[in-house]
Image 1 (cartoon, rainbow, N blue to C red):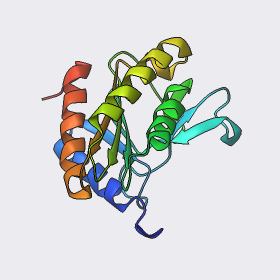
Image 2 (image 1 turned 120 degrees about the horizontal axis):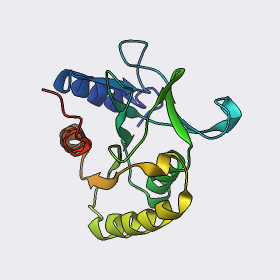
Image 3 (image 1 turned 30 degrees about the horizontal axis):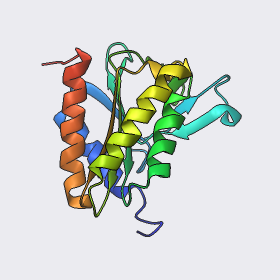
Image 4 (image 1 turned 180 degrees about the horizontal axis):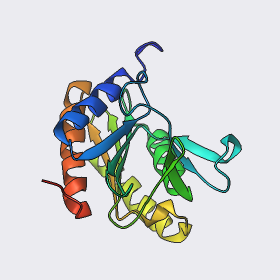
Length: 181
């Protein structure tokens, strides 16, 4: 993958989510300044650069309340354990999530979804990472660790990534209890 193409697939997936889930705000951290593009950050302490833990790829947010339905991290080219864990822990270790200057509310209705592309599906490894991540999350005591559900998943090709993310996003919306008609 070239630097130029970095994030283009994630931006396309975010645009597909915007079309599918029109009752929600879909924010994303890739692409131009078109609707929904901008920095989604996990932070602690002050809302300044030195306190940022990560830039999150996609956020699905209830329009009327800024309640965060899903945080989505997409690894377009690989599913290395240190990358998946880094994505998950940097999100979970934060005290809050913001989009531009807007605080998004994390709670039991929020899902954290981390998806990577893998030539070999590593179900056993993903399950191991998930189990230990859940155990660690219980001891974090941070604002973002209040998420109600965590998903660590892999898909065999980039061509299957968009469909899988849409499915996981639909499940997160249903699980949140914030489903709009």
